[in-house]
Image (tube, rainbow, N blue to C red):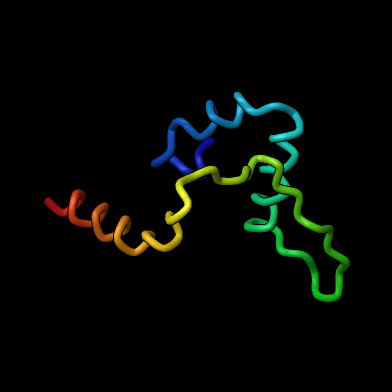
Length: 76
């Protein structure tokens, strides 16, 4: 895979996908390299690899605080 030499593990990651996961990833990636022609009917996206999030109740309320903490941690 020469298109993304900065990501040498990408091919190995793709090799680990199940056939259904590979189909889903292909459907997303193909949109980056060959956009649908104008007026073409597009299929609905199926993204089974995206799950739901189980977290503490106030996670959304604390999101800004959490992001600021990550920035501070990475900055210093």
